[in-house]
Amino acid sequence: MAKGTPQLEWCNVRLGEDHNWWVDEVSDPVHWDVDALSIIDPRQVDHLIEAIEPLREYGFDPDVFERAFIAFRISKDLGKGRVKLQRTKESLLESDEKLFALPDIIDEENGPYADLLDHLTRLRVKLLNDLFDFEEKLTVDEVEDQIRESQNNDFIEGKSVHLFTELTAILDFMPAGYGDDDEEEAPVAGKRAKRRTANAEEEGDDLPEIDEEEDERMKNDTSLKWDEDEEESKDEESAEKGEGDEDDEDEDDGAEKDFDDEDEEEADEDDKPSRKSRGRR
Image 1: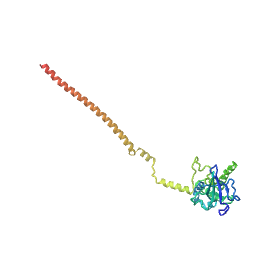
Image 2: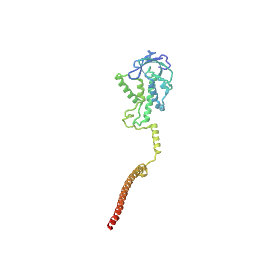
Image 3: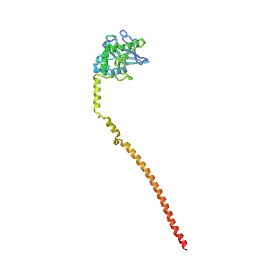
Image 4: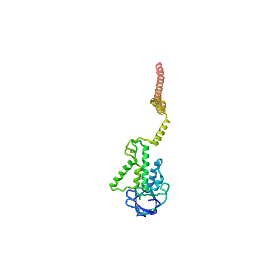
């Protein structure tokens, strides 16, 4: 449905157990089936805007994005996790207001939302082929087949696929074996990779090269160990000072001993004359 179509003016939405918002009631029940009809909340809108940023370099068209959604603002809190939304002409990409976005899925095959899915898929494929050196170029059909297989599994299990999940499946798509933390980093190619590699090489050129012999010489260079030597020197001085104090104490003890010996000798000398004088008498 085009944005100019006047039928859909408001909708009532509820917060589901999965913490996503789902449509309960619309002003145009003739064209819109609310059974498992999901709507993208302001937080998710911000996430999408951030996720499409890398695609601008590959030809992202903002108009395709804007046409794919009908914007709503909060009109009234209905309580119990339900909110009434009113349609607005504000731009999702440019407005500072917190807006809900209802994908225009009246024509699921050829409508504006279907155009957006195709647009994002092609840009994501371009980005991945630019970032990674695949043996064979990734194709749009391969990406669509892998995403469709995952969605079919959800349908088989009876799960309702939220449209935000459908969009992020494209924007976050990575081929098997790439982008996982437990996998080795994939070989990177493309203009972005070349720029990163060139910048890394330029930064490396600014650093001085040190060969093994020079590195070993620096390790053994005593002039580079002044902190350690200074500490060792202080320890040696303290040790020498301690030995010096002990020597001084020994010298003092020796001096006192000599002093006592001299006193004893003097006392003996004093005694000797007295004994002689007594003998002469």
